Length: 96
Image (cartoon, rainbow, N blue to C red):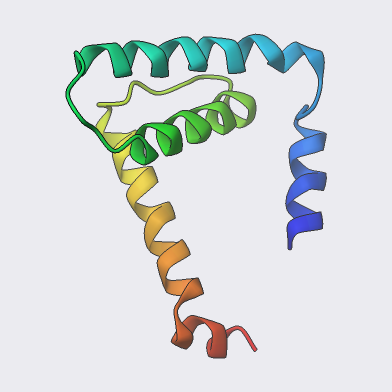
């Protein structure tokens, strides 16, 4: 599965210099999100997940989502659910 995923992403241009600006743009967006917290404590894992998902969306779909976009939040929720289910004991047994 991992090899398949990397092959597909490579076909979409992952690892090419042309995608570097997309990563830089997303890094600027996530830094801006951290600045909005104004020094208050936060759990950065959600922001990093949003940023990495946005990088993939910009490579695959050609556009990034705003972090508050309902469609983007739904996409992240579905992705988390699939990950949670497939990593559960039931999901592990079912994949056999």
